[in-house]
Amino acid sequence: MRECALFLVILSLVLVSGNSCFAKDKLPPGQGYVGSLPVLTRNYGSNEEATDKTPASVSPIPSRDFNSEREIKPAPIEDPSFVNIILKTDKTSKYANDLNEFIPLLEEIYDMLDENKSVQIFNAKVYYFNKSVDYFRDKYAGKPESQFVSYKRLLELNTHSRSISQLRMEAEKYNPYLSYGSEGYIYNPNNLREQMGYLKNEIRQTILLLRESN
Image (cartoon, rainbow, N blue to C red; front, side, top):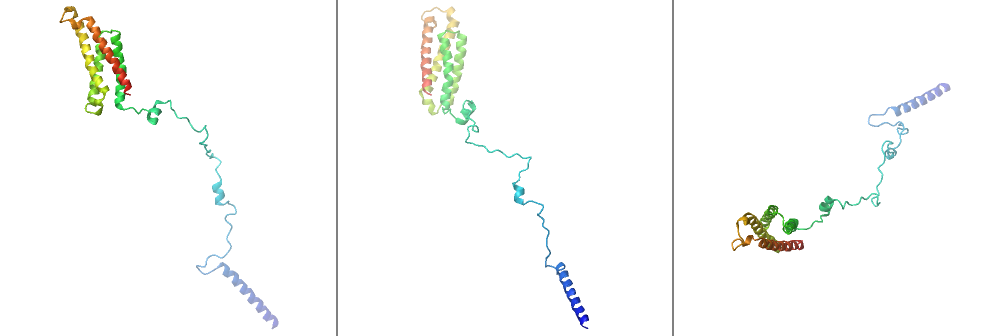
């Protein structure tokens, strides 16, 4: 009887131990898994290590030292587009620019008078000057610039130059048929030279005035 009771006790302990192990693997729904999980990161590095590593095929961008003279390119001050557009050094008015355009033209007319160029060449240059002054007059008519001395002087010179151009043309045409009496005196070579001298003096003064107006 004692051996039979001992056997029953040992059997009951075995059954209790087996039920306990079975309970760890099979739990009621919603309780989750209670077993040990595998270490998934043991063959992989951390995310931080992965982001810090630069691929061998990508070269790092070198840093630039903007305080270095080698990194700072000199300004292209000799480039007209840089000077005129970027620096905007031309601060003169449109009126002053228009005056400057008359200076070389008047110098040419002066030289033609001084060298006594042919009437045809002289008249062609004067004609161009007259047209330029007409445009200049209409452009600034009724504006404050029309009260400037330079504006009025150009208009006066325009009238005088046309009269001398007309006089030289008539003298060349009528001289063979006119005596230098009272009617033909204005075509006398001496009178022509005197009138051309007056025009030269007026042109010289006008050029000086235009230059001073800038």
